[in-house]
Amino acid sequence: MSELQSPRWDAAALSQQEITKAIGLLMRRLDVIDAQCGAGFPLFSPDGARWKVSSGGSWMGGFWAGCWGLRALVSKSADDRDKALALCSALSDKLQADTLNRSMIFWYGPALCGRWFHDPEAQRLASQAAAAVVSSFDSELGYIPLGCDMGGGADGRQRLSVDALAATIQLLQVNDDEALDKVARAHTDALIAACFTASGACSAEAQSTQQQEPQQSILQALDRPGGWSRGQAWAMLGLSHAAIRWGSPYLDYARAACVYWRRSRRTPFPADRPERSDSLSDPSAALIAAVAILTLSERLEDGDRWRTYAAQQIAALVRSSYFVRRDSGIAPLAGAFKGACYRTSPAGCELVESPWSSFFLLEALCMLAGLIDGKEQGTQSHSMNQADD
Image (tube, rainbow, N blue to C red; front, side, top):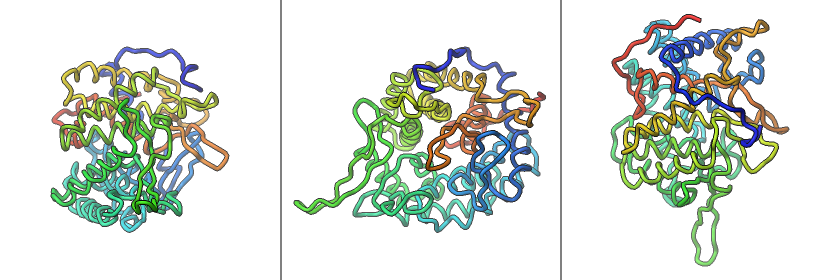
């Protein structure tokens, strides 16, 4: 569905009862997915019943652990906490993977669970991951390359990607190490220089090439700024955390990226590629953008207005057909969020349910409920009982 064909949507924010019910549905959905996937990590499902499963979790494994971590925060269940921490431990073999996406694996899994549950093993894994990510910093290129694993390809060591920016900035804070912070900032600055435009539109990827005269490496964007909705949303999330970490000028960059989003994406169901008439919608992009705005809103003078906008976007997604609010009678799909536009095969993209999009929806709802904050996903003092259907 293209942006111009998006359905009408209800702009009213969610009630507390709606938030509580949606959180409960998402939490119970985890049991269904877990039963379907056995000992493996779920990657994606086009229908909510058949899952692509990975023994190691690929780049999504941290989000699956993070989903169980969020569930444990809400449920206060020791079993849920132990499940989250066991999943974190199962990610340890990804420490040496040649990919910047280690930042997502270990931030959304061990780093958050280690922080939430004060678990020394998860904290140790997060610390090791931060050191491993920093060791991949290329001082000549001036950034941490995407790497060749997990789809990075043969030229992955010359490519810069926006997807893991937020996770990288946060993961490199876990040791409170000035040297790691310096690398995170250099990486962020390189991405801004190559991918960010004055309009606030951001490219999702850049690549370094060697120039002969004079002999130097040139970093150039590979795609049209703002041309991929989820890439723009990833940039917003990363820049929001850069603003929280380092203040100006990153606050201005983050705000500009958010303004561009509002101007170019008029509904919570934006096209994955707005320039293509045959593009599927990507509600997950709007969800990531809303989390970015909630995160940034505390630093903006008109933050209440931005928070209201983000809450409206999340409400529209929860009330939409992309989120199943009751069982269909065919399969236990209640709590499924089939809102991620994802390339499932060389043939193209599909709308799927995935652990990363479910994580962001559960995170967004927990933020609206006051259970976690947006700065570093720290816990708040509020409590919530699991909702009934």
